[in-house]
Length: 204
Image 1 (tube, rainbow, N blue to C red):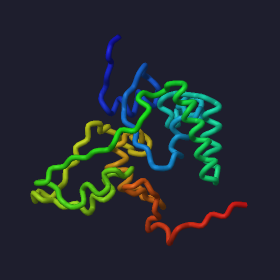
Image 2 (tube, helix red, strand yellow):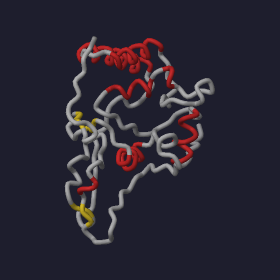
Image 3 (cartoon, rainbow, N blue to C red):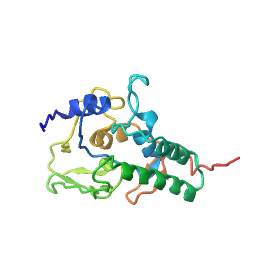
Image 4 (tube, rainbow, N blue to C red):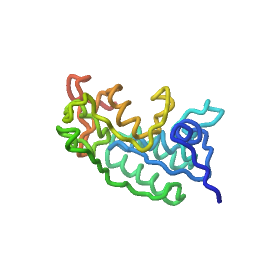
């Protein structure tokens, strides 16, 4: 066995999308809603020449039964039924051992109290982690707050080339691409100022 590592730009922009690896290790940041499982683990989301190498299924795992369960879960309005569909798909993922380990690491953040102040820890457990950085304060007076990231890909387009990098999502994409809903530190969804209030959904 020979380790053939490459830098973050190569890893996230070339090898992962092309499934050019025997074994890969990287972090994956998941929102509170399980809808992210569909683009990440269904057969039709595996990047191939046939779909112009589009898709987020960087594991290359294809299980038709699991794909159907996840797609159906995206359209199921009943929360209990939806949860059962998702859990059934997760059991198939576990049976095929497509990822190790199969658990969520706790999120942790560290900062220098002589460099940055404010509610730095208020959103560290949030899917959008640094979303409140506009409330942080520069304590040492150098006019900037520097965030250190261990995997920062040198990508030119954050949407098409860096979407698999959690750090890119945390520090850039979430900051410049607001949505109709935002996540909270306790894993809930709240409406943003893009909506006038909580939307009402009517099923027919």
